[in-house]
Amino acid sequence: MKKKYKVTTGEKTIEREYNYIPFRYILAVFITILEILAIISIVVACCYYIPYFYIAAFVTEFFCVIKIIASDDNPDYKVPWLLFVLILPIAGFMLYFLFYSRKLQKKFIRRLDELKKYQYEKTHEEILDKLDCENAHAAAQARMLCSISSARVFKNTTQTYYPLGEDMWKAMLTDLEKAEKFIFMEYFIIEEGVFWNSILDILKRKATLGVNVRVLYDDIGCMSTLPGDYHKQLGKFDIEAKPFSRLRGQADGEFNNRSHRKICVIDGKIGYTGGVNIADEYINKVERFGHWKDTAIRLEGEAVWELTRLFLTDYGINVKKLPETNYELYPKQNDISAEGYVIPFGDGPYPLYKRRVGKSVIQNMLNSATRYMYITTPYLIIDNDLCQSIENAALRGVDVRIIVPHIPDKKLVFSMTRSFYHRLMKSGVKIYEYKPGFIHAKSYIADDEYAMIGTINLDYRSLVHHFENGVWMYRCESIKDLKSDIDETMAKSIEINPDMLKTGLFTRFIRSVVRIFAPML
Image (cartoon, rainbow, N blue to C red; front, side, top):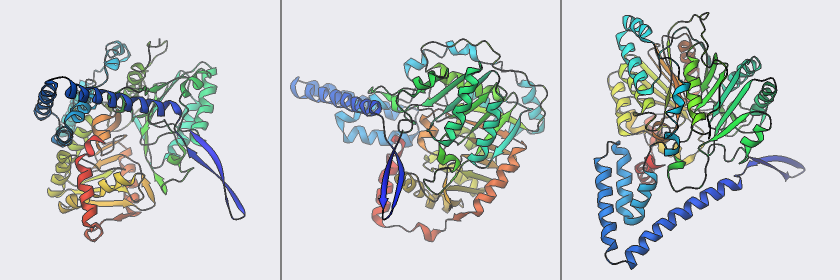
């Protein structure tokens, strides 16, 4: 949420804005910290005053260590927790029990069976068989992705690629004006400003005309951009709005499993996704870290069904009572003809997703690439498994290039990103930094045939904890547009060479320590 203030410099008075966090969020964080300290204090007091209670604490810590070692989790995730538990004997295992789990909260799990009524029919074997005849390897990738994400493969869906957020903004406003039945929007960040206000004006007008408008925004993502009761304010305009996983001040995993998704669905026929949040810096109306480079994709056709399903699932687990739907959610569209195969998909915590979907898609693209694999990502903080997949592709002779920002939004995260340069470059990976500013795009393309655009960053938050979504494409018309845009972006970027990697001993030490605990951040 913004506050305005004036600054006088010489003879000029400049009006500026700053974001502040509403009291509700501060209180929730404060209560959470008090709960954690209270729990730890009780256990410490019991160890001190109750005879032999410390033995129970020691046994608990021992079994905690065994549980971490025996788990199926990635070793990169286990190591920092083991260190944490061993270095802080009581506080360590208490925090482990509170925050280690990456499972969906129980209040969400209870709703999953009810949400099945919002699913669509997933009969796509005929399309998969056709793909199998064209390219058996591509068909195998599609089957795997559909299996682990509960999605399906679609044909006859047009795609429009947008190389900048402002391009998507113009098209979205046009499509929103044409909405007749429903508008569903889900974003990690919504911020009051030119971008959101232009959309909100349409949403208000459409709601008065009987269009069902639903908005879902992440409660933590919007803590400094929207008032704490913003969903109630939207309700006054007949807009059904909900914060995703509302922060209540509980000592559990509510800080994890945020909705990082970006979805806009119009009448079940048109859908938007990509890296663009609804805030002015994403359309370069406000400059924060130089030029903001982001991308998005527009789908028109039956592939939009999956975006609709993802939204309804997220909306459904955040409302007390599922709303009745009296219109067709998944309309047939037989008049659309387009090349290629499209799979919109979601990723998130267990039990919705039993495997890391986004990571699997990226690794499959790396493993199948024979000529090149280009990646754009705002962050590069990856586990050893994914790092090896990138290295192996480069060592096979694949031209692997990664574009990251030159002007960071978070200095600590940027330092961790740069800590991976040396290892990857030794294997032949080329690293570029987007010189004009901050690149927020999450784009992946291989061999002019495969591509993935969505919300998935190369960091632990995105690959492990958050609800994410993306669009996998094979031989789609928009892939050439993505390739052309990445080539242009690379031309504006700085290619990193070994001389640029020289750092002092202290910097290397700090990066090494921070990387150990990166999976917990």
